[in-house]
Length: 269
Image (cartoon, rainbow, N blue to C red):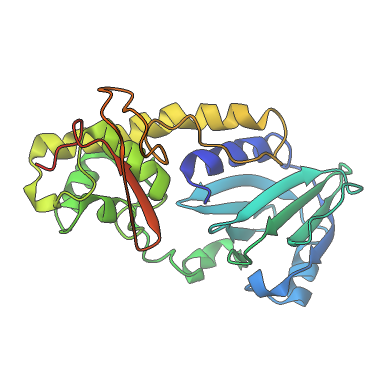
């Protein structure tokens, strides 16, 4: 699943290429992922000129000069391509946008779980999850973080990946953040002191500032990259030695979610 470093890298890549380009052809190829009719999609986008691409949580927002916004939630398997129109299309290609520079922007989704919306800028809150999302994980201030986390109980990892608390943190990077903060993923928030919470907030920025340039470098000028997370320190590294202390990294699967942590660096209390 794309998380903040992936989406920030994609956003940066597209903002170097899309602004000022006009859509010459808009194709709705797999209707199940669209939350806009094919007719409206084609009518509004053909002839539209791209502005900036932004991000909110796990959503990418493609702005247009006329005020419409194409909102894409890639979910588990959604990916983007920026290619020559002659490039072979994947069978799971859901959307293709022909551009005035001769390139094509595509969105493909092997699981058909992603969602594509087209709304006016003043109707973004009509997009499911937008109205209930907490502040973006990259934008939350220390003060707001401390105020918000006090309202939550339960295990700290579950709180971190709850989009109502903060938008944009997923399973992989929650493991990395908690490792950086030296917090056990199943520790109850109510047992954490002020120092723990301050360290957690600092670790969010630290981890994303570290990971995003690495992901951007993996693209190497090609948006059609294979997502790799082998550089992560602990996520999906079960059984391997902890990079800090050498203790075997634990791996627990619960609710179709893999959690990795070091029992020595991340004590239960």
